[in-house]
Amino acid sequence: MGRLGIALLAALMSSLPCWLGAPCPPVPTSSNITQFVCTSPSLSSFPTGFPEETLMISVEFTNLSSIGPDALQKLPNLRELHLSKNQLRSLPGSLFRDLPALRVLDLTNNLLEGLPPEIVDSHSPLQHLVLNGNRLGALEPAWFQTLRELEWLDVSNNRLQALPPNCFQNLSSLKSLDLSHNHLGRLAPELLAGLPSLERLNLEGNQLHSIVEHTFDLVPHLRYLFLQHNNLSSLPAQLFGKLGQLALLDLSNNTLTSLAPCFSEQNLTLELDLSRNPWACDCTMLAFMRWVAGRSVGLYTLQHTLCGTPENLKGRTVAAAAKDALVASCSAAPTERPSPCSLPRGHASPAERGWPRWQHPAPSGQPAS
Ligand SMILES: *[C@@H]1O[C@H](CO)[C@@H](O)[C@H](O)[C@H]1NC(C)=O
Ligand SMILES: *[C@@H]1O[C@H](CO)[C@@H](O)[C@H](O)[C@H]1NC(C)=O
Ligand SMILES: *[C@@H]1O[C@H](CO)[C@@H](O)[C@H](O)[C@H]1NC(C)=O
Ligand SMILES: *[C@@H]1O[C@H](CO)[C@@H](O)[C@H](O)[C@H]1NC(C)=O
Ligand SMILES: *[C@@H]1O[C@H](CO)[C@@H](O)[C@H](O)[C@H]1NC(C)=O
Ligand SMILES: *[C@@H]1O[C@H](CO)[C@@H](O)[C@H](O)[C@H]1NC(C)=O
Image 1 (cartoon, rainbow, N blue to C red):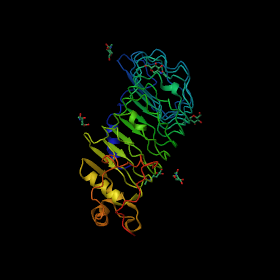
Image 2: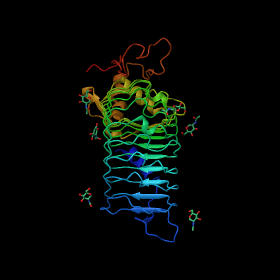
Image 3: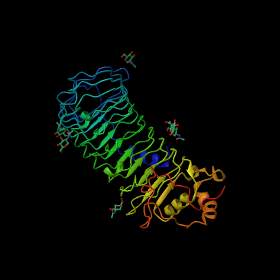
Image 4: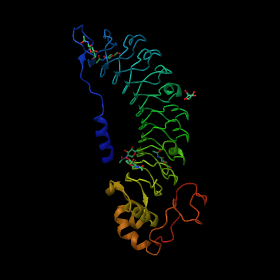
């Protein structure tokens, strides 16, 4: 994880709910206790006896392997239920149906292979659903389609290989979607339809080889996009062109050789991590670095942002190459080559010329090596 990741993690940690509460199973008491925390490692059945006023229950780092269908009755005020670090393999269909106030459901680090359809009922105010670290091999649209208030969905560290295209329909409040550390090889082009509020999308650590051109046009409010540690070797020129609020893009540790500077120029303030890719240090890269330098674009981890080609620049930082070697060797070519996103009329863009993806042909000023 780079500096970007750590900064973001710190921000996330500070927004996590706090864990103070009385021990559970609850003992009858006259005081007005609304939060209960069980951490006994040998606890194997869900405790009973919670008062109706209960707002938060945490049964975590315990040994639950199942929960009875009636375990969560008569808790009309329960807002948070934390069940992480247990041995849950499945959940009864009606388990969460009688929790009309539930906002946070955390099932991190269990053994779940699936969920009951429509986990909560259709008027649920559920805002955070965390399924990180389970064994989900697929997602069912039926799990999520009633979750109109959901803002945070974390399905990271599961076994997802593909997602149904209509998987996230109607999650109109969703701001953060974490699909990191799965086995996703591709994304359906319409996957993000139905997520008009999305601001943060994490696809880190999958096996993406390519992403279809208009995939991100559907989420115009996206601010944070994590694509690092995938197998991306090229990206369509206009992939990020509609993301007018993009603030952070992590493309590190892929197999990219070039990137078109096709970002929405209005109000552009962008942090980019391009490290650990085999960049082609040619005149296109020089133009890209000049584009970066002329704008409010920050490049992270420059010491690991290296040239993969040509042979004489291999292993040098892109920044150093752009400072001297490239300037010298590209001086025969027009210094600021027009980017393919802003070609003057009469010039065909790479896409129009029929190149399948953003793969720049050898520019005219390429050094003879
Ligand atoms: C218990 O707390 C709730 C809200 O936190 C409050 O409405 C209620 O009056 C309190 N009851 C007693 C007996 O203190
Ligand atoms: C957890 O439960 C399993 C049986 O389901 C048991 O074998 C194991 O010893 C229990 N672990 C603890 C710490 O009690
Ligand atoms: C999504 O919402 C629309 C209208 O808000 C509704 O017509 C449609 O049935 C919903 N789809 C699902 C899968 O719930
Ligand atoms: C790069 O990504 C791969 C997965 O695609 C991961 O296994 C590896 O640890 C990553 N390398 C670095 C230096 O982060
Ligand atoms: C990445 O893609 C290349 C070909 O595009 C393939 O040879 C390689 O096995 C892939 N690596 C992973 C980790 O999927
Ligand atoms: C520019 O971006 C900033 C920060 O994201 C935002 O507050 C502002 O409203 C944006 N301005 C325009 C004109 O989009």
